[in-house]
Structures are given as C-alpha cells and as structure tokens.
Image 1 (tube, rainbow, N blue to C red):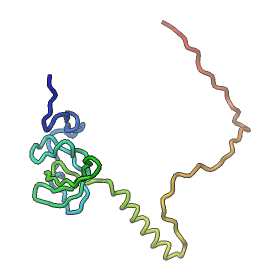
Image 2 (cartoon, one colour):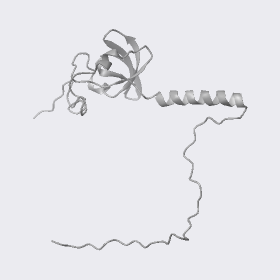
Image 3 (tube, helix red, strand yellow):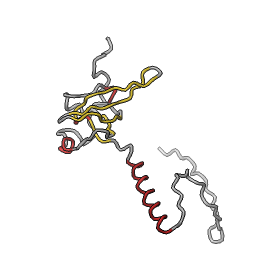
Image 4 (cartoon, helix red, strand yellow):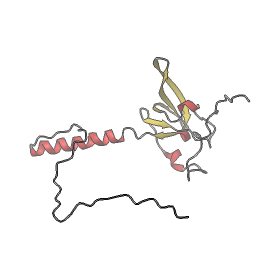
Length: 160
C-alpha cells in the first residue's frame, strides 16, 4: 500500500481535540481581541476546516501583522536549509490563541520596577539579577534521642 501524502496526512493526534474540550467552540475564542504585534500560538482546531493552517504551523509561535474580522495575518520564522525564512500566513481566529511565553518576563519586569521604586524611596541598594539555585545551607543532625535504625529488605516469599 502506498503512503498518504495529503495536506492532513499524519495529523491523527495533532488535530484531535483534548479531553473534555470536544464539541462546541467556546465563545471566548471569538471574543478575544488581537492587536498588531501580539505574540500568538497557532493551534489547529480541526472542527473548523476554513482557515486551517498547514500541519507544519501547528504548535508554532508567531507575531500578528494583520487583523481582519475573522482572521489574523501572522509572521512565522521557518527554518529552511541553513537560514530562517519569514513566512506570512493568514489563519482564522479559531486556530489562534495568545501565547504565554512572555508572561513570566513581563511579570519580572513589573516586579523589578516596584523593587527599584521601593529601593529609591528607602535608599537601600537592591540586586535585581536572576541567580541560579544556590546550594543548601549546612546543618547538623543530632542523634541524641533519635537512634539510627538499620533497614533491611523483607525476604521474598513464594506463597501460592
């Protein structure tokens, strides 16, 4: 038998809906506002065939460059050979959601700004750079009331 090579070949699991997310599409999908410059994730929803992105774009992240009433123009950087090509794809909003990739960064910027403001008012210097996880502090184990126990495995028994 030959190998299928259609547009949706090999998408049996990629295009399937998640557990408890089958059926009608949420209204919030249509009410979400997108603006030029937003970072979005492309996640194909196979319940809507119109404006369905090609399977390569499923799971990719891009930047919005055009907004229409029912679709978005998105710039995605695609590796081709030894370079990245800027691909412009038009995809309906059912297949798009806001990316959470910048949430932690934006939150850290806000926290740092608050720390700077507080340090300026109090006059104390503040260190804002991220640090890797440091080794744990040294501690002493006291065995006065807590005697060590010898632990041995239970012998294997064959009871039929």
